[in-house]
Image (tube, rainbow, N blue to C red; front, side, top):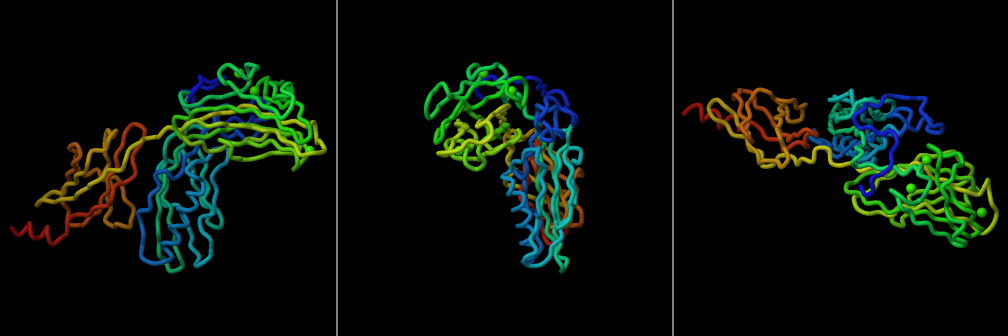
Amino acid sequence: MNGAGYRTTFNPDVTYYVSTNVSPTGLGSQYSTFGDGYVPYTVIVGRDRKVYFSMSGYDDVEARAAIDRAIADYNGLVYVANPISDKLYQYEIEPVSVSIVSNSNPAVVTATMSKANTLNLTASSSSTGTATIILEGTDIDNNKAQTEFTVTVYDPDPQYSSIEDFEDGNFTGNFVWTLTNSGNPNRNWTVATTSPFEGTYCAQTGSVSDSGWDAIELSVTYAYDGIIVFNQKTSSELDWDWLIFTIDGVEQGRLSGLTGWENEFYSVSAGTHAFKWTYIKDDNTDGGTDQAWLDYVQFIEIPPQANLAAPTNVVASSSVSNISLTWDVVSGATSYNIYSSTDPYGTFTVDNSGTFNGTEWTSALTETKKFYYVTAANSKGKSSQSNIVETPSAKKIKGVLLK
Ligand SMILES: [Ca+2]
Ligand SMILES: [Ca+2]
Ligand SMILES: [Ca+2]
């Protein structure tokens, strides 16, 4: 993140609890569930989602695809001011009911299903971390399909976040804005004290003539993908005089009419971007006080949480008494986990029966065929799963035993 940023109350080591009476006035419900009114949590959905279960049949595929599609709708990133809620299945072919099989970390996120297969995810107000959630769809013939995805509740690190709150009363300093205007430069945006969203100051448009515009722009470099969050307000001719927000010249959203402070957020990819707010008017008529405002702009990068690749080249082998799994070293991993199940389409659980030796795991051979996958882990989390391997076939085991 370029620029040191300016923040007033952020402390990453403090757990922020629910506060429904946050100050300053205007934060309202936007932040009431999370943080102290200044520190938003974000939720990342789906980066490690993995479909690992499929029965035969068209309906299963449909259910699985619908679940994946619903998760993908969030573009991998959801701001916690908007809890996730989405219908998982359209009743286009056959009814499928979706249920939650498991949630590995309910302290971080609660998951519920409401009517019509609507998945609701709500992030914790006090805990960060990752939860793995498994959903199961069942059709009218009792075919089942499951999907697994992860939700990470993330508390932005000040190292990767900065805030422009205009509280230094100028458009220079930590953030150097570019101001442009269709006419008289004296009518540029100003730092004003008119009912700010936060603190004492906010940015406010100048006096703009009919057919004119007034723009404020900032270039920010993101080292990682992230989000931009800001608060805007207009008092303008509804649907004719607009405050338009663009990233790199591409419109992201617009606002007009007599509004209160509205909270907006957008995904931002890694790299340098031009964030621009333009108040632009048509050729006649004013509305309200003919102005627009901006305050409390947050630039938040979200670094990779674990940044681990799934283990590859997983091979199962057996001797008379043991089964061994081997795999290739995963860069950045400090440990590995083995998951097993007797049903390749069933629920896999952590298998603590064996011992690790680097990237080899050995356990006593049992008569029951088992299926395995491996994940890599470090202090920030774990990778997605490897391919599934199985106990070498019974015939081979029997052959070995007869020797
Ligand atoms: Ca402010
Ligand atoms: Ca400044
Ligand atoms: Ca107008």
